[in-house]
Image (cartoon, rainbow, N blue to C red; front, side, top):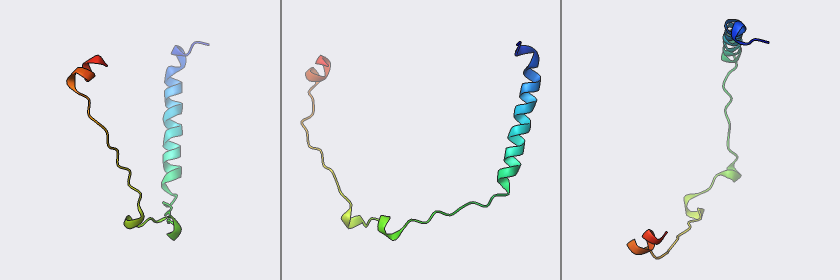
Length: 64
C-alpha cells in the first residue's frame, strides 16, 4: 500500500477526528477534585531531610 498517494486523505481524516473530539469534549464540564481532610498535611508535621556531606576539592572533581 502506497501511503504517499493517500497522505491527503489521511491528513483530512486526522483533522476531522481532532475537530470532532474537540467539540465533544468542549461540552463536558470540568470536574473538581476535592482533597480529603486526611490527605492534607500541616506545615509543622512535614518531614525534612538534611544532607550533610563534604564538598569535593578541584583535584577530586578532576579525578572523576
